[in-house]
Length: 331
Image (cartoon, rainbow, N blue to C red; front, side):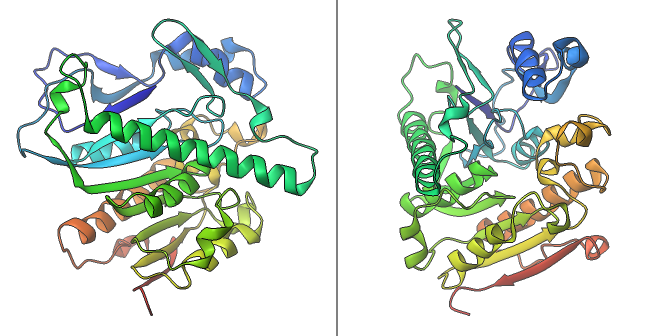
């Protein structure tokens, strides 16, 4: 299953898109993942996004750059509308791929359901078994992304998405993702010649192929990490990212947003102030402020890549909330 956000010219008659679909199925899955009865999350059926369903494609440009998005482990394709909708409004076509078995709950139009399978990352096994499973999982996600890209590059006339054919600029393609999806974006972009840049949100580095550390990373990277004080990842996770890019041949921005937890990088950070009581990694930073910071830095980074803009990535009024460096390749 994939979901697409794109620059639109709505007529005003298109309905707002729901956040979850199919909503009742997904509410049960979300509740189960948090150990809650479904009725406690019943309000989610009334949550809609800002996007209009099936609105006409905007004609501002003939071709729009493309962004691939991969969710986190146990996540779902619409988990980051705070960012995907923003990018679409700025002139990007955003394709979000749902990765079956490691997604929260994949439901196909014919009713076929593939629930989350915890055995994709088995617990209580030797390190080498776990590491092999993590790499296998990542390779599947990378292959999913490559398959989706190939499909979109060859849309048949009878596809419901055929209106996008000829309007996707694959010479300006970006890979992005959250957590495990961030690792998949990093792996995909080094393997895909068309990939121009990577934006990763609190990426989980463990699944990456060890061989990736033996070569200079060739694409510009924006990496946004959660507050280490939240201790969602062990320090080794960020150390692995530093090791990955220490010989990078392109620009790398390694930034930390203080006051954020791991789930402040997806929509579920807005669930409830009580979410941390149910194992949700939500930091003290106000969720909307965190979303704004992520959006602003992401759009500024992409502007430097595609528009030649020379601007500071961190807004002046957020320098106390964000720290890190941007280093040019070879520096």
